[in-house]
Length: 367
Image (tube, rainbow, N blue to C red; front, side, top):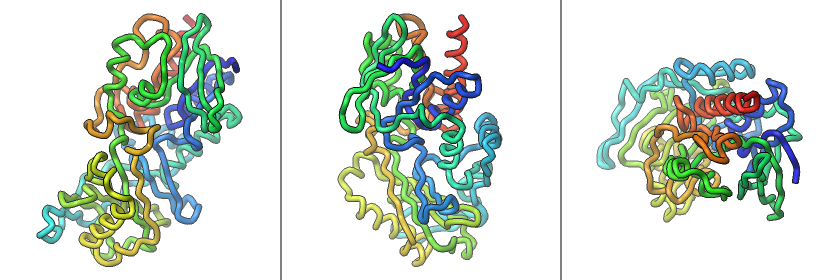
């Protein structure tokens, strides 16, 4: 069993932010355990040709510097380049299959939304570059946390199914509360208030699916269109321009088909319906994308549980991130985005919750 001062469970934005904060205050005795074979969590990008200019986001896309200054400051400190969400031109509204789409000069209000050159993957890569990569372990799924007199025993399974263990003085839980409660056995059990609140907290992105179509040029702009559209016909309910400046041209949309209904539709059929909708809205050129991607978060067990498939997809108030008393009080803190007081479920929430978690760890250490 490997002893460490701090174990970070989860290698998404919250976990990476926490690791960078620990490093910044001189704490080097930590390990990060990530169940996936990659870092980033719900931040997921893909590049058509392997370059940053061709990156498109399959997970979260935007942040709002005007009211999320902590995330904006992190972006700037890492030397990343932000740009405003493209929005010039008319939006489109599709109200019925029997009616042509209508132009909407106002479109969907995205005036304060910003994105990153290279996609949100650039944020993950930049943070990873600021921590000790040797302390990051991927493809290892934590399945049990056991309280001990000196902290927490962590039992996990590696990619081959072998049991691997660590012992930490403190655990920073950087996976969504509902996923943590479903995937990890706690001994002793969590206190009742956490055991009830964590599984009742929806995981943002869990029931969602995104479709992205990549093109050689943003042809919709030539027609005076912004690339934004709203539809009650579907399958895409909301569409946006996903192009990179001086890079790839793309459109993306959120599917309006429920997670449960999507399970009965083959992915190639869904993609075909998405292409047909883009043709209805933007013309024949939209029917022949250079590449297309469909990311269904509802089938990712690291993001979704059965409770997410039929439940609401809204941002909800954060549950308590730690126990008020009992054995878990001093050794376990939730730091995933859903535990953020201000921005639960958002990228900014992951940064805020991880800061609060590290600050709590440091206070406990000096108490």
